[in-house]
Figure 1 (cartoon, rainbow, N blue to C red):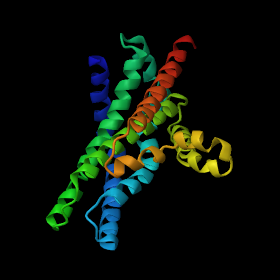
Figure 2: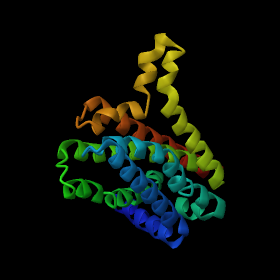
Figure 3: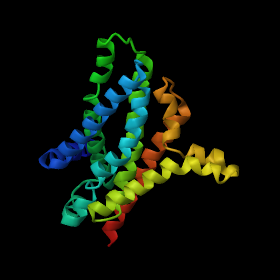
Figure 4: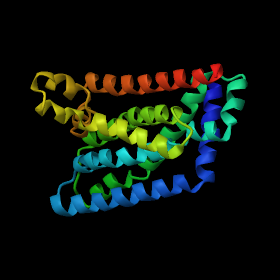
Length: 236
């Protein structure tokens, strides 16, 4: 685990050595701040529920952008060979890079904590329960999305291709719940696979074990397959 954390620190340094972290963070905070102000003005309610749902949509674009270079860039530049020949396990490489992307998004979320402070400052007295569970849900959702982005990055040497594949996977899981209207017999199964469908209760202040298990299972599944893909390079 210590090796994975070392890789995480190295990857975070790489993020901030390039403009991508600053550009994505600036865009995320600008869009979320605009939506927060717009929702607050229109609804006149001391709640972040609608904002959390909007951040879900933003994550569809943020996740591919933050994960596209994790393994694809290493494969393109050839530095992945150095990692694979070093005394480092494949799962440590994948986990370390995944944690770096998730930590960066966590830092971006921390910058949004002034939203509830604004609500309290305006005398809205928001319920802290849905705020806490909403942020927890966003982290779990991001973890699931970033694991699929890490998997996409393990499949190719091209960052753009990795971003497109990740976006395609996420969009499929985003829209799959609506396919129940086309195939009513499989509606319950398709709904259970829906990414946003498992977030609703978090935004409303409830934590259901089913939703937590879904996001954690998706995260572990994505990281597991990404590790297996990385292992195949040893036999090429």
